[in-house]
Image 1: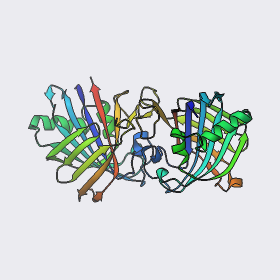
Image 2: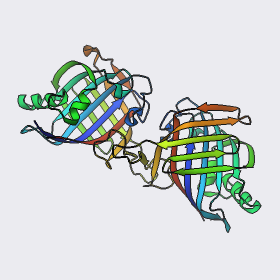
Image 3: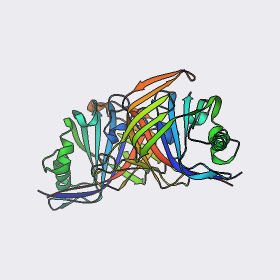
Image 4: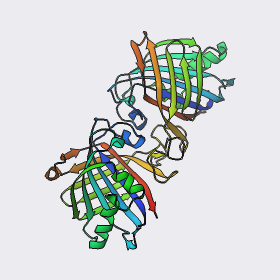
Length: 202
Length: 201
């Protein structure tokens, strides 16, 4: 019952820039319509290699992120085979325990589990994530006076203390999710943050 | 007319946590009533040593911070000698040129320049600030899972690339300034502490 997963996380939402959830505060609008994508640069779940695959959560968060009761549609990229799909969704529904099960405890309702083509092209806060006809997102990071990307370090939810999260803005955030009972979103210049993650459980 | 100044900058305001102005975005309520302290840890203006002194900048910012038109009350540390006071006033009103003069171009009106008692006891986003009778604030940083303070690095306006800005919350922010028409008594709003380095030859 073990897993080791590391890679990049992208969070885009309808908060203003610098989503307060990253430091445990309430979302700017009181509630949050978010997309959280985990791309596994390297990963293994009970002997199943999931490197290169991506999991996407479309979520409605009804209040403070830590209070839970999220309504979620779960997507895995369509290149994942049956064993990989099963392994990834087992981890994210909490069946494999460990740190991801703690995250899964925040979910109140899973409205869909599906596969779709996913493109995850992000580097240090710059790039795009697309998913079929459901998601179309682009982000650009903030930069300091010397051109270095603005980062947030040691935020409360980081799973890799010391690693930066790249603070950006989504020039495009399109989410077509009303078929799941999750609001459609079409926004420009709202919050986008890219970070890194490492989840391990033995 | 050169200067080199290094020290700590603290900003407390009525924005929610993590003031968007630090990224060049509009303040959360659309306007911003902020209090800033610039504590000089090391530095001189021309040949006048101003180390250990603090300047308070109290602002009424009507919109995006970069759109200017701030109304400002400038408070000079009452520990300053007349010579030091003049040097700091000249610096902050733009007479010495350089990066601090660029800051002061955002000011539409300097409503008052005064001496006052300033307490600046802030380290790594934690501590206490008082500026004259106007402002009092207590703040503490957010912490990561290992207890390290949450920081921003390389924000657009930093004058010290690579140095951290501590993302904090003011458990108290009182700002009572009839000259700017400000009366606030807030709990759990934005406070950010960074470093500054201003140099001009």
